[in-house]
Length: 269
Image (cartoon, rainbow, N blue to C red):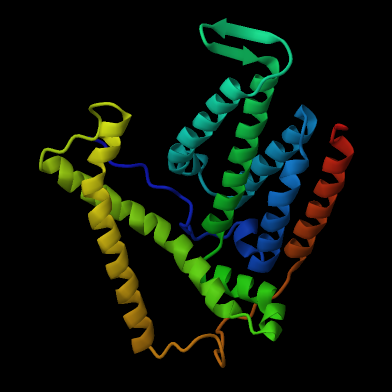
């Protein structure tokens, strides 16, 4: 039985590509704004532009496309389910297919394609961020961007650290789940037989030890941080100082041009 496909979200692959050398703050700003402007796309030209930008980002990352695709397989199931729901529930335009109670409209096909593309582009861009940015840099960049909120007594450092740890633990928990499933299979468990409800019930012996393992890991991490004298962000120093470079300025210029292009290509409602 093959093991689970490990997700790439949360993993960091060291490298010396242009994306690796960029300041984490500029990458975070790009991703945050990109996640908002992606909803401006509503036609083939605008989605083509976003998809081209995503493909260019994959090329600039220097990471093998096979690694990214292999890690995105679990997400593809969710994208497929979303597409099927839009095909089934969205009505409008000409009827393309009618089979018993199932009727597929032209608008349903269009929405299924656009929503699936939007979801895929967002996941790919978010994955590129974690693949090309180390957890330490990600935490520092997020903390620097949110630092103005500290004037309002917001624990910025703690929030940034929690987000970074959460991303880092995604592949760890996935690997732990893979080990538990292999152990259950060795004891005779079968996760492929029966209907949907029976399959869901068969995962209960996996989820319980996974939750226990997660709590144990969280406790061990907290004890390790206390043993090393961690007391929050106040008074902490950093070995590496973040500094904007020409690449970061170029990235923000590209972001501005992308916003203008999407507004220009957007079809009127």
